[in-house]
Length: 301
Image (tube, rainbow, N blue to C red; front, side, top):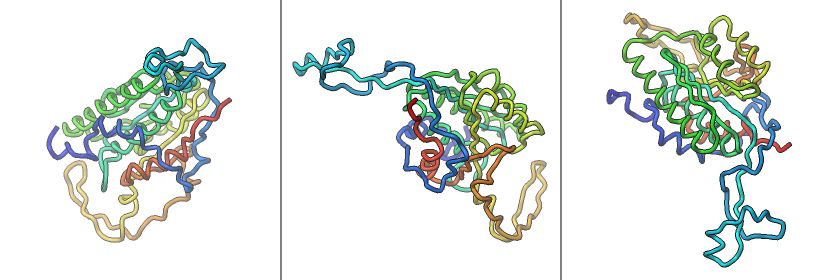
């Protein structure tokens, strides 16, 4: 990768996405809680297999969960507690098409989309669910099978990094046109299990004529949840004349008469579906607060 692209906010780094595991944040009270349904009931799959902690034995504990190492060191019976597993499957869908590879402040929209999906994925894993990935670009998509626990999330992060690097390389080679999003999403019905949650992070540029139909079809047997990755500075430039360079190399001046008022949160919809709007220029902590509000922990059955 050339040096100009090998910088934070442009290049996607696995370490940065892994570090988002702890970026839970406090729920933002202004987030559109009604836009993205959360806290849905999921079936328990048992006590799980990943150990959450070890504590002293109390009467009634299952002796099959005795921890030999702690018992031998302390001389007191200790048992292992397991992280509960739930039958929740979340497929993370990243839009890395050419229109996502830009940004005016902290990060490219593509990087912000990957950060959002990483935050959601870590939350799902922490609640005992399973995650997978479908990364869409101008070239071949990158798919990561659904898996649970931290290893499943690390596989998703590896897929995000590979897909983003491929998208940057295609852009450098001159590939600038977006494939229609509706066509790219058509493969979701084949790779997403019935009942799965689909978290789609995109700018929703070049949606295609059938995007509303595609989302409606998916919603019949799955749960699509849209995250609209914007660049709020670019969408609300102050009045003035701005030089632009077009895709063919021509240059022109664009005059902007004033700032465009933001739509109310409840009116932010994509193809008739409510969407959570995320600013690519916001800090990860600010985005984490939005995610915490829109993706609350599961309620027990």
